[in-house]
Image (cartoon, rainbow, N blue to C red; front, side, top):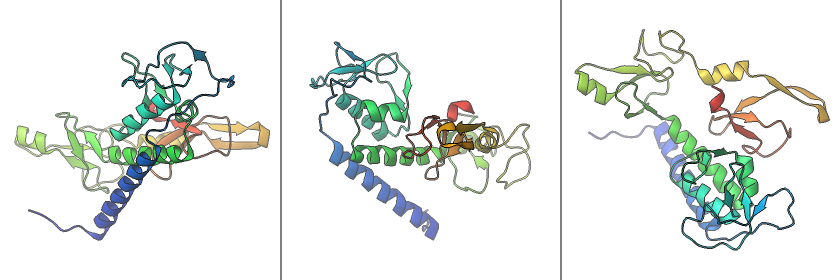
Length: 254
């Protein structure tokens, strides 16, 4: 049976369509541009090696430079690879060389890929879009299938696969990912020991950092992006830089 969208659902759907159009437009603008490193850039480590991200053997003209993981790239091959990750729904930049699982920071990608303003805007939009989508899906602890949370105000989620297999309702906590305990609906926690919002806990307990050059103290080292909610850790180099590129992901700290 079908159902009519509520006004909130209609607004959300409109935003998703608008974001998708913005991503497509940015992708069309930034595609097929070859960029070259400045051979006088002393901050880069140039090597006489193959471009290890040129999977289509396009033979980009730029000199090769080393990423932090030690693999050689050109700015165009790196841009193409990171764009491919974003188009596949990823929100992290991971090396594409076989056997290498290194994750690059946004700052490193922006520098090494020589991102233009248009490309930077596309990358930021796509990362936020992908992160929002992943926030609405989690893995069921019972059967490991993807489950979508339909009620944002209730942490209790029912898995239809486990419910069918076990022939009884199977519900788990969206927060601690254990079988549900206690009364429902609830938006704060279930009755499992240790169930809490890890993101809020990290924001509450993260250490402060100090910027001595401008005499600023007491700045939290971890913040939540106001656009997508992703936790980011400050790189401690600048107080006032562009959103998302002066912080690295803080998920591994949780």
